[in-house]
Length: 79
Image 1 (tube, rainbow, N blue to C red):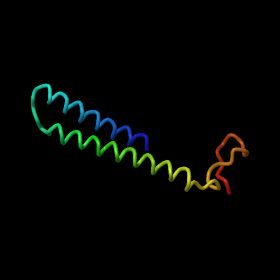
Image 2: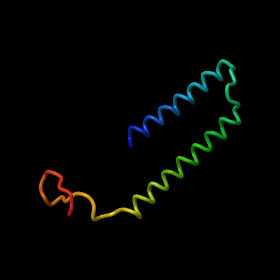
Image 3: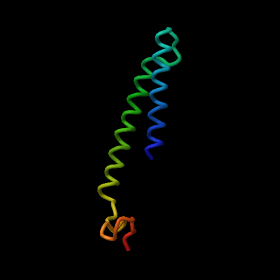
Image 4: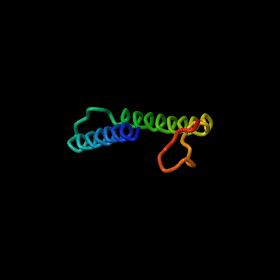
């Protein structure tokens, strides 16, 4: 999961850097108003997915699943 999030973050940063470099050279691939709307949309999606992940983690957690810490140094599943 960390790999996927890191990969997506890297793609977003590279896209933004490409956009900034193109704006320095006065090349308009995407209009600035479309870029701001896209960034706002990405922000709303990121916040929404974070909130949904936290809801799933806190309210739909199964405490019976997991590992028994009292059974030694090797992880043993709970029964």
